[in-house]
Image 1 (tube, helix red, strand yellow):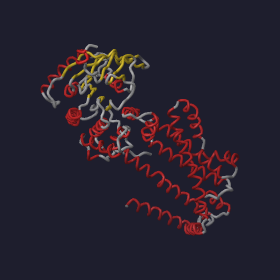
Image 2: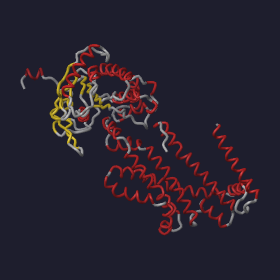
Image 3: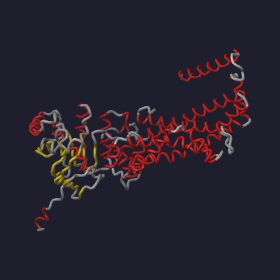
Image 4: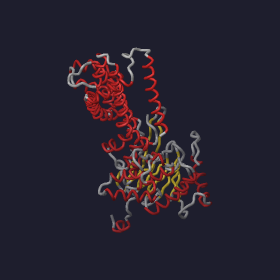
Length: 255
Length: 270
């Protein structure tokens, strides 16, 4: 209770400081608009539906791409951990591709798919797939062998051991990999949306870019705030429950 | 086979270990963990394997469990060769090996879920019965990390007992616990053994523990791992680890153990 009060007071002060800076007129209001103007823009954008539409477009890209990354990343990570051959081929490839900053995929995606949804999905998948794969692989490798031994004495065999023992045992790693993957995907998608106009839908990045084109700083800042809020909410909705579970069961804070 | 033989024919031993040898290759040398070890274990017997570290007693336990395989020789369970792990022979490890992603009840149910012909609520009842047996019925939904070391080993015991194996293989299960907790568990394990009529093979380097628990104490020597001597402990049960008779017995075993100790390994047996 006391801590949330601290948070509220801090942000209130931040807002007040901003307004004071604006009123001091040190910088042109074109560069530093009042927080009130930003608020007005946000209310307007929410009222006329542009904000909602842009958010839906962006979130759809992100969620579908991210889901694909998990669906492929986790099983592939299990495979690289299990089979030497897959480790030496796909594992090495994944390691290499993960070091590539995910925005670097954007030019390639645009050339391959044009200014379409598929290009965006591709960017999201490339951003998150490899870190999820590698985290799963790492997780499996750090599972204490005694778990599998204990399970085998209780009659657990191959597939059962993998699904019921190895996979849950590596959950702390998988969740942190998923979180990292989410971060990469989110960043690269924003990069792509700002970088090029995607003809099949205007996302938040597009809205941000247009703010610049129109020299509308209140729009730029307003959209940035929305992007921050979405990031925070995603963390709370997607990852907090998992982390809570891990904390409760394992008794240690992961990450 | 004559009629006389047929009539007096005794059923096969619960466990027969026939000339089992096993060696491991490390970078520096080949370790002969076991060298032509043979041992018979009867149904319902409590056998303790004692020896200093590296004498192959844990290796033998793993081979009986079916987790490892001998280079030579074989292990028969009820007259059948052991080809892999089986529910009939459950293992309790030195580390509790409980699964942190499951709560206490689900840990105990893990083996039960792999046992066919059991309904959901039946599994639950069985698991709860064993949790009660180890005195943890109040901790059904606790998380593993919330339990003390002794409680964790009790859950591990309940988990090993739950699928109702005939044989229980215990690999220094109490070694990591404090003395007080260990003494409680000596009582518990004897009570459970008497109540559930299990065949137990118990590996330890603690001579007193072996004398307290075992019907028979089998003494191993290292390099290569061999059985040197066997002691039948005919003290009445339940036995108290601190009793004078037991002390006399364990002294005798300890003297024998010292004779077989190899000087190059310095770790002493208690």
